[in-house]
Each structure stands twice: as C-alpha cells, then as structure tokens.
Length: 159
Image (cartoon, rainbow, N blue to C red; front, side):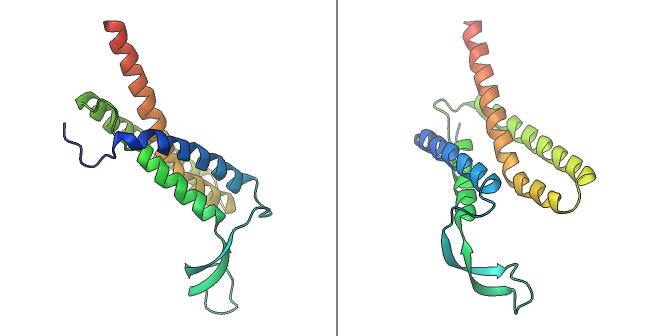
C-alpha cells in the first residue's frame, strides 16, 4: 500500500519522546506557570496583541514570553509526526484503523466542543478553546494505538 502522506517509521520513537516531554511542558505552562515564574522573553512580530488601547494593537513588534508558544508548537509538531508516522507493517488493516480512529476522534472532539459551547460561558470558554486545539490529536493517538494494540492481540489469539 502506497502511503506518501505518512512520515517514516524512523520518526516514531523520537517523536514520542518529544511528545511526552512537550506534553509535560504544556501541562506546566498552561496550569502552573500563571505568575510566569519561567520566562523566555523575546521580541516577536504580532499581527494582533492585547496591549490595550495605548496605540495600535496590530502589526507591530512586542516583547513577549514565548515559552508557551514554543511548547504548544513543539507538542503539535511532535504529535503530528508521531500520529502520522508509518507503522512497521503498514497494510490495509492499519490504514483502515487509522481512518476510523481519525473519524472517531473528530466526532468525539466536536461532540465535547458542542457540549462546552452549550454549558460553558465567558472567560472559562477561552480555556476550553485552548485545550480544544490539542484534544483532536490526543484522541486520535490514543484511539489509533489502542485499536492497533487490540487488533494485534486479536490476531495473536487467532493463531
């Protein structure tokens, strides 16, 4: 089966390591770094920012703690590489599980988002949207590897 859109299997283990480390960093940055005890200040170009009405708040250079942005980008990049790396034996069954897991994760993600839209309001909803950026990828990875594990166990039991 030809799968041009998947990464090489050689990226699977390194991306898992980076994914786990970036997940821990993400949990730290989003939940425990409220007072910004850990900072990495840099001048960045902002299309928009929240510096208020002291002047133009769009298209300008600002000083910003970029730690949270870096950790989020690292999590997304490593998650995509891990999720979409080929398995050692990439066949039609794995492709079917991959597709079904992606559909299942999308339904679950947007089902939870719809629930949150109905029942969560105001500023807490911003947090919901922040976490929602990552849940589709997390749901897919968990479901895909769980179903892959189940299918290999089932195949071993049949032999």
